[in-house]
Length: 226
Image (cartoon, rainbow, N blue to C red; front, side):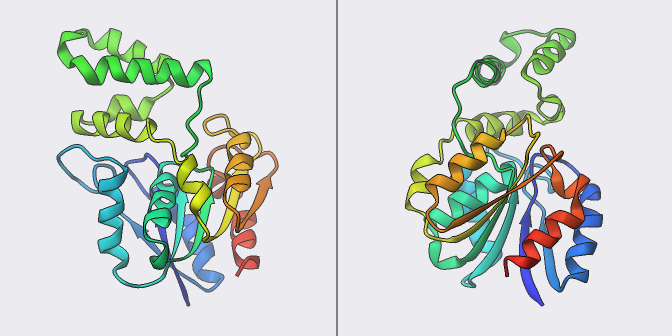
């Protein structure tokens, strides 16, 4: 069975991945869901993409691994593939984060995160106001995160992987939900353009997590690419 290491996005539970994981196993894949520090695995301290990449290096060891990354997990997997190309046989990106966008929504989100993460309690002691700010930024997960992970998220969303994509030569399969509002399909098109050895598959009527809503279609795309 072909082993695939899965790096989930910004979530605190892997429950929704069960159907996808089951379908992958039925299709002949040995799926290993990695528990990401600070999210599905407890961790202290502030993390950034470099620290996550070193953590991933310990997980895959000296093997040439197949990595599947969704959203923030795709950001980590992409950076890892650029830094340790000798350790990546194939990269599968599903609605991946990594493109540093400058539209008003993203700039507003970064500004709010900087305000809260930068001055903490000095900014406001009002939980109601904080909740309104998080809602304005569109980040429920940020509201639920411990303080160290708030700083970690700020570190991660400020990373621009464009230079990394340009140097990557890893065989890459990019899968994207056509109706994704979190990481728009234009990001997937750009990543495909930047990574020379890549393919792009767009799933109609799917949003940010097509492996939840269209698991059979996602599994079929992956199976046909091997």
